[in-house]
Image (cartoon, rainbow, N blue to C red):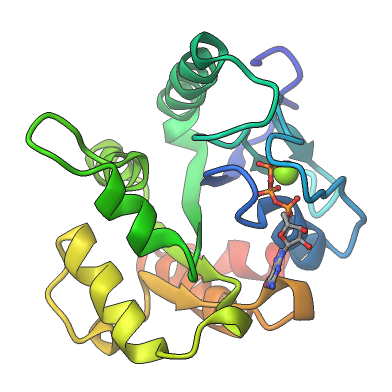
Amino acid sequence: MFESRPDREYEIFLLGRSNVGKSTLMAELTGHAVETGQRPGVTQAPNHFDWTHPSMVLTDLPGFGFMAGVSEADRERIKTDVIQYVERYADHGLVAVLVVDGKAVIDIIDRHTGPDEVAHVVELFAFLQDVGIPTVVAVNKMDKVDDRDERLNELCDRLGLPGPWQQWQDTIAPITAKRGSIDALESAVREHLHEAGRDDVIGLLF
Ligand SMILES: Nc1nc2c(ncn2[C@@H]2O[C@H](COP(=O)(O)OP(=O)(O)OP(=O)(O)O)[C@@H](O)[C@H]2O)c(=O)[nH]1
Ligand SMILES: [Mg+2]
């Protein structure tokens, strides 16, 4: 899980449940082909992309949640590994991109929320805030969503961000990675880097 990381100063983390389109987005961001698939759980080890700049690595971390052919114990282990990975390299982390499926995310959160349960994506979002890594939620597959504003407002509500969602354009970025519509994400990431005084890094990325 940790051995393959190239020794780079800056890192961008890509996280999210299986099958939300992380690898598709990574391919779109970097212009390089990445293994993608209909079968959830294609990515089980981090994919490091280190060719954008000598100081930079983009890391596509393994998915959470349901993965075909992966046992419950393995899923828990992968989740723990991902969290440990982010904690370990947090100091290098410029931005975390938490990818969700815009069509499915609300149902998934609500199904996994209860008196003793916090949905993974909500837990991850809070965790990233705690670690102090600027986070953008890339709400992918917006091509499949009809009630766009309503859906994005619901997502803000579930993440504890008071609506309307338009107030959070540096945090909530609706995209359709498959068609290359990722402008909202790019400007949110730019905004975070700018706020962090890292305009120098922006040019390394886009
Ligand atoms: N409709 C639609 N489908 C998409 C979009 N982005 C990705 N997909 C599809 O979603 C499926 C999963 O995409 P991947 O990129 O492999 O997802 P992943 O998050 O890397 O999955 P794991 O590696 O299993 O964690 C593929 O069939 C993609 O073509 C999108 O914007 N819209
Ligand atoms: Mg993948």
